[in-house]
Length: 173
Image 1 (cartoon, rainbow, N blue to C red):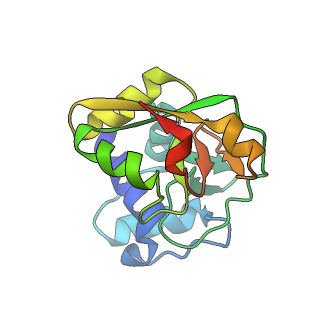
Image 2 (tube, rainbow, N blue to C red):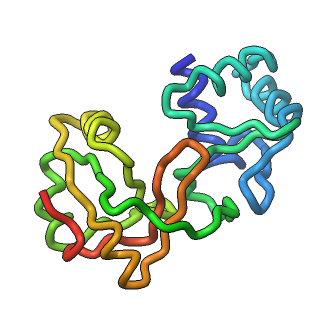
C-alpha cells in the first residue's frame, strides 16, 4: 500500500504527464483513466486496490468523488482545489527537520515547490511530519495573528491547513 500511495502521490500531485494523464482544473482525474494509465506504465492496480489505498492511507492523501480521484493537497502542478477561505484555530503547528529551523525563523515558512505552506492542527501530527527527515522540531504558528493581519487560510479534506506564506514574526519554537 505504501508503494502504491507514493506512486499515486507523485503522479497526482507533481507529474501527471509522466504517466499520460491530465488533471482537470481542480486536480481531478477519472478513475478509469488513471487505472488505464497505471497499467500502461507497468504499474497495474485494480479499482479495489485503489479504493483500499485511498481508505487506508493514514494521512488521507487522496479523495474519491464518484468516479474521480485527486490528491487532497501538496500539488506542485497548477490546480485550484476550490477550498474556501476559513478562519483558522488560534494556533497551528509545523513540523520540520532541525537543520531547517534557522532559515525558517529568519525567512518564514514558504511553500517551496508547492502551492501552499502545510500546517498541522496538533503537535503530534506536526511531530510525525517533521520526523520524516530526521529529528523533528515543532514550530508554533500564530494563526489567529496571521488571520487578523489578512492572511488567508484553507483546510484540505484531510485536515491539513494551507496558507501562502508564514512570515517569521508569526513563528516561535
